[in-house]
Image (cartoon, rainbow, N blue to C red; front, side, top):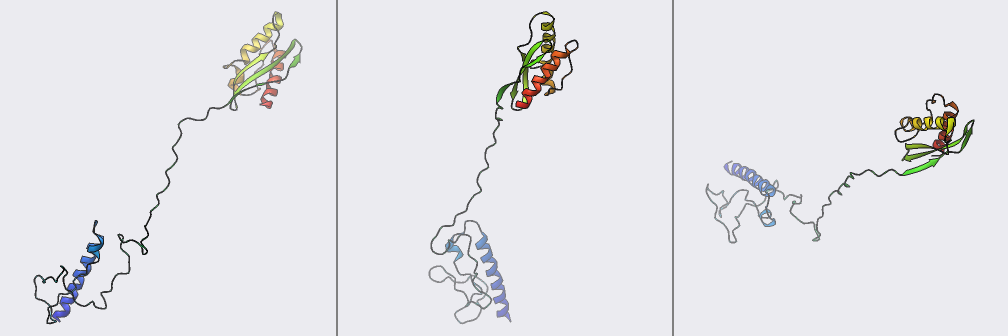
Length: 198
């Protein structure tokens, strides 16, 4: 009975030592392959009394014959190399692309509408776009001088430029300039054609 108790105690201690040795960081291959004493045995075959067991030549402690329950582990150690001497390689995830801080510059282009003839003359409208946004507008070939020129100047002042109504509304849906209905209508027609072309 005492022999069985010592064998079980030795097996438990050996298993604990094996787990500690295999899990300890920096444990080399040689330390993991050393046999673990399950139950020290004296030369007469009886269990050794409590106390240190004399070491065999080479510094290895003699151990009892392995029992059926003490099978070597089939799991490979984390430090062991695969059979055939090949190297194990771990792949790391590719690094994420670096975010860009500058947005691409939108292209600037100019589109000119057709010439529209109306009661007091003719005109055409030219718009400047940055990307798809209208950033400037101007009336071209508008009447100059006299009452017709005054009407054209009023329309130009209201609709054209980077701060005019065309840029504000981004469309040809403009308010008619008071006293310059024909000029306003001609301007809107040429503007709409330029927007459609853009």
